[in-house]
Image (cartoon, rainbow, N blue to C red; front, side, top):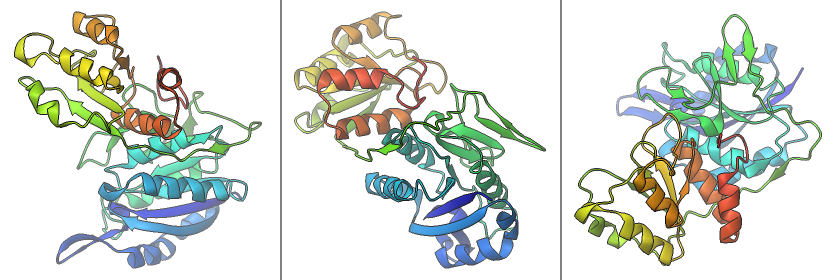
Length: 332
């Protein structure tokens, strides 16, 4: 029987409804999982460890580092890992872990729930049982399991606040579908011969600007470009920004580049890919040294950028690594 390590980090799955609303209840979670889900022992030899109990809104790079280090320390001892995590930043954590590990040789699957496990209509049992079972399969990457779908972690984004079908993978097909049978995709990474390495380093000197009509560029003067190393622009559509008149943003981009900041262009649209060569504004960005995030999610773009900054790469190498697919996060 496969050995699976279950890591608890908090989130809705570990909460309960009380008189003051929904709150974290780690002691109740520990009791529930062993009392209410004995079927898990029939799937795998399950071991659990509580790393921290956080609402996922409070998750940051220190938690990502802790998760990576714990998994890496147990990489030879267990056959797979399941992380229980809040849904709000689950895609960020999955993406961050996917860039920290290179040549991952074991499945690392994040899951959680939209309703606390203590609630009778919770989706927690279904998600957890399936995540544990999938962690026994040869899936050598970081993934998210939710509502009968297994998604590549760095291709996933949260799409719904209230539906059980909370996550989607806009530009990449699911890794597995769970029904009566489990159907695995041929796109799953399978690594058996290369040693796994881990680099859980993240530099948060990144600032994100979401473009909208009538955004005065003067509002962006407050960004300290002496401290920021990357400005990530959430552009319209295929990578367009305003370029005319008082709302034109090209002078701001030029200022960023003169200060030595990388400028990365992602899209506010979840589906398809940024292409800076297609329209005038994109070509103007390209000419000034901006680079495209392709079809990456915002979560992947942000965490990949932080990881590459943390590695202390020279500018040219940063650009090369960013434009390449390191762990299946982009198609182009």
